[in-house]
Image (cartoon, rainbow, N blue to C red; front, top):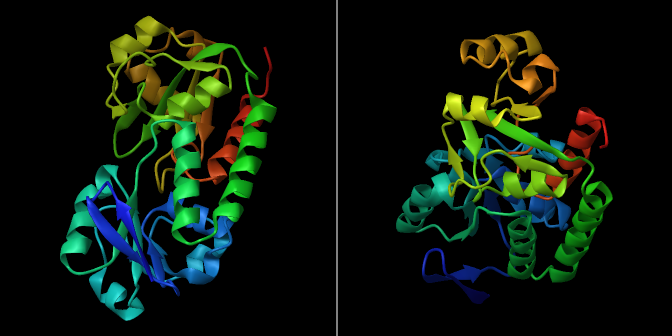
Length: 270
């Protein structure tokens, strides 16, 4: 057993030679699968739906809450979390005696590469991690600068949330040639001011449904019209693209495949 220092919790974390891992974030579950560490995964969060095999794993918590009865059944010797909304849960688990290793919520695409490398190193699977990074980088290069347009991105998280300069989604869209209208706002995620969106008049709108979201195109248009957006170029020209949940809000290696799908959905090169 080795110990690695984790700056996010300012402490050393023991890395078992035979890990029994619970992953409480879809991005981490994705990384574990793609680097070939799936045999070590004994539990996941209720939101982990990739790979498909994750649906058969015991559900041990959400982003903000652990199911302790399930955790005690699984008896993990390593729990992987992220920062952001999981910061409090990370400390709660640590205070209850669980061995927890958090990774940083990325602020750019390169932060995703960093997390893949960190988890690869954690499990002594560095070469596998580099191979995954190489594949993601190739996907990214294949779709770089496909477009030249301004974009407004919104995700339904129980209410409208958009993105600023500190969000990796801004970085992802920029690589496609889509410039976020809030690129110069020094925040990651925030509630949009509808009049600012109207003034920016984006060329297109990307709207990602929340978990369980079943909104159709007509429903989205109705929402936008109520906001006074009927005269936006993107609305008039029907340049509105609805994405399934966990498409761009997923920050594991699968994001790069999802970006390719976004290019196909938007479907025009400029």
